[in-house]
Image (cartoon, rainbow, N blue to C red; front, side):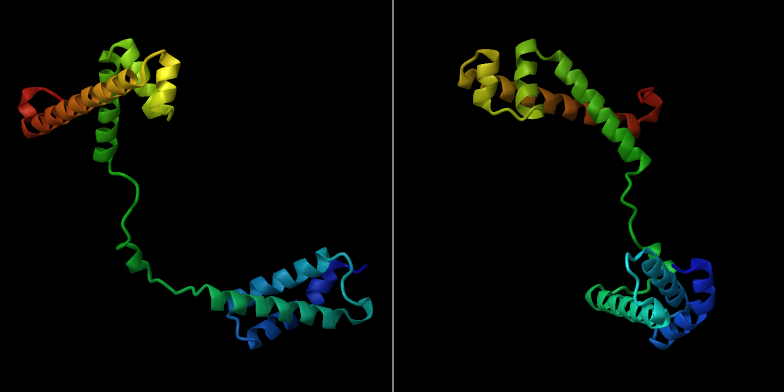
Length: 180
């Protein structure tokens, strides 16, 4: 076995030069040079010890070819930094976060206002994804009664969410009202 440090010191410049001649830019050639030595040093049976230099060039050529194949398949275009400013930020605004939290709180209050069987039927169907017949069986109800309870719960929650949204709009329009 050979000394990895000595191997790198002896052949790294010429492998880097070879990769630059293959058309790779300075950074890409430096990365590929490191990859060449990583592959050679981690190989179980590196090429013939008597012709290690040829083996390094073979690995470099194969890695270079792989890079060009990848570039043909996946084209990567340079995007100037100014263009990044035009990309919309997917994170919600603070107002949207607050609105979502208010809606969740309103929904939790609306669920708490429901009679126990109605709330259970709604939660089983909408939150646990049970079918109406499974909800009916779970709550020992007829299918039509289970469906009615789920429908009533949905209507009640929609109404409360609508009321909550209306209150929020009125509070924003009239900040002197003291509601927040």
